Length: 445
Ligand SMILES: NC(=O)c1ccc[n+]([C@@H]2O[C@H](COP(=O)([O-])OP(=O)(O)OC[C@H]3O[C@@H](n4cnc5c(N)ncnc54)[C@H](O)[C@@H]3O)[C@@H](O)[C@H]2O)c1
Image (cartoon, rainbow, N blue to C red; front, side):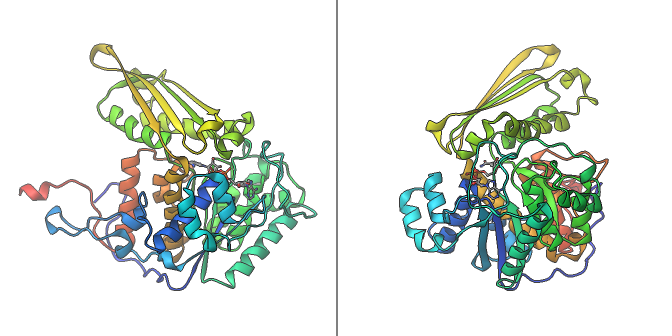
């Protein structure tokens, strides 16, 4: 049995995933349209759900000798892709086909095949304020007498959608907002609601969406690094209304690599003097991140992982003065095809220096789309699981996020392999199966 886990006793049953799962996506840009078009392509048998743990992943049950590794989607009751229905909000009026064509992630041939379906998904008017995303200016926006009024309008959108589906999950795939630090307004539900009434400047649109979702008992995932649900008022609201939340900022390219490499270096007690990470990208996300205030939000999210993984307070000789630098440069010719370079200055036995170079030529939205899908499906599962739904933060979903959220006083777990084990053990646990600790002494009795 694992140290942090309590074992495989049977918990109360999980409600089945019957009927339609409504997915409300905030921001129908590159990531969102790649996810939606991808789900439709998969439903039609045109492509495989590569990169999606919920669709392709397996889970080992019992001993290695038992040879029992079902697909995760056959082991836990997840919504089927055929039952997923999408809607969303955007500050531009483009339907999902037009927006996907603009994003240029998927090729024209694929988009043409999916066009009749994609055209039917048209954004609802958004809650937006350019103060929070300097580089964008959209016209398809709601107006209201204050932020509370805007929250009520979003709640009305959710209520209307709820009438057409059986369950709802919301995910933020909209632009990165400026860096905001929590203030008094974020400390309790009452303070937050007063802040909505007074148009408090520390309440950004993403928080208004999250407030609307959680008030409606709708789970909420945050694909961007904004301060959105990671403060006491939202955690309280999430618990009160049994509306699960998780951390923030999809862990896709560079940070994925970081949270794989850093645990390896640490496991072998190799020191690190410096880690320089740079990126070029030319999509709209890159344009938004070109603004220093949005970049700061992203930078903070990207910086966190190394400190937590290396634990310099425990290993001062190896990691105390690590110089960690992150740059993101907007470079239009590349579009969504981001290029990331990492230079890692490490040192080994007797302090002798070495270097590692990583050059990841990735496709941002191709990496993010399956993460967005998995988060939606797993949050819906959490909502239907009595043992999970009122916990607030779903730490087991840290696997997908650059900035995992954890209980107060608990450091977030960034190591991808610990995160993966935590996720799978959570699934085993809620299904009453034995946890797997990889001890394995029994094979040698
Ligand atoms: N693709 C990745 O690898 C990746 C990884 C981590 C995080 N993210 C984050 O995911 C988010 C989406 O990325 P993207 O590449 O799809 O960006 P994008 O610019 O293509 O799409 C964002 C969309 O959100 C809309 N929008 C902005 N503010 C809004 C609001 N208040 N309400 C409704 N819509 C709003 C924009 O009009 C745009 O259509 C970004 O915040 C990005 O930082 C992406």
